Amino acid sequence: MKFNTKIPKPLKQAYNEELKRYSFCLENKQYSNAWYHLERSHIIGQSYPIEHTYSHWLMLKFGFMQKDTKEVLGQIIRLLVGGWKSFIDHVPLGNTGGANVLPLKSMPIPNDIKNLFNSK
Image (cartoon, rainbow, N blue to C red; front, side):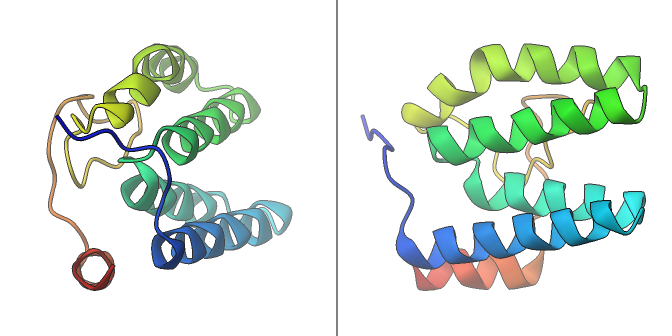
């Protein structure tokens, strides 16, 4: 069994870039763009417990900010189980992490992120 503990440097850089874009969009009240970058951070970091959990934490905070009860409840559930699923490398690749998708549903990975995964 493979255990994921540390995100590779190229993925960490891309993950951090998505979080910077999220923060910029959030500060400028571009909420749909902010969410888009949170989803991308989730896709990049979901195989690594710290990054995966942090993406869900930010999604939870975003759900509270948007007064979105479904998102808040969905993120609480994901926070309880997501990190350990990352640790044992049992995540649905491409899943965007929001409460609008099933937690165990694999989804298509955007081409730029797929290329990033292939080059790590």
